Length: 304
Image 1 (cartoon, rainbow, N blue to C red):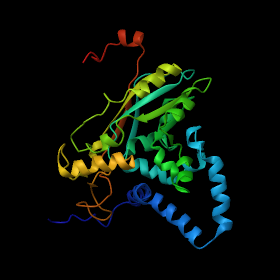
Image 2: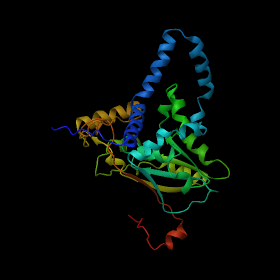
Image 3: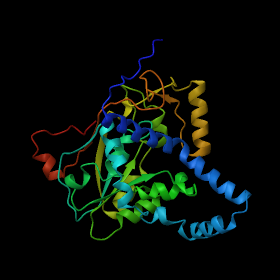
Image 4: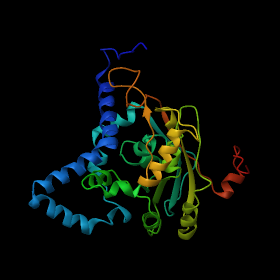
């Protein structure tokens, strides 16, 4: 196989985009383990004056991911996220205006491998979210597992994600005054195992809990589809019934998250590596009230 190397005269902006996405991928894959390792080192070397105060504070702060999290506008405004967004690039598209006096659930599909579209649009201040949805605050719900990792949970929460537990979603949707959006990647870990280029396999029939929560709190459902999400990575072939898929599904049941064997391009060459391909992501939020849909010239058939 002939390796295609990146040219030397690439503009600085594109190199910074690559660096921004590289740190995001490495953070997703390795940062939690590094943080756990730091805590282990502090304990084994008896640096009690560092880990005891943190563990004490962690005990009292344990429920924060289920109570709206602790976002930091400073972290969300880091310049690195602007380069991250421009790497693909990521676009957010709105089809209808939403009422900021109500709360909503954004049902996000597809999961893809690393959910780049959801992170770029709802966890940074460089997307068009604030301009398209003024008066709203978006909460991206992720697996509770990530908030059990000491230190890493603080970094994760600073960008805005919260737990996807029922209590967490209910907390967001029960806020008075409206203007809150729970973004739930409905397909979850199962859907990531089917994230192959040119293919969309969505897991939604088994997902009914979010509908019950919406009915309980009077929240409206907004379907969100992220075109291009599945084009960012390739996966080792893992059809249903194969030994690899069987192992992946068993590990998912044990650990709570999936382990897709993905690959794409590298930093300095385009043939192999863990960097996503530069493919545009268009995340479309499509919503209409019953009255609006009945009078829309471009109705969507929802009977199937």
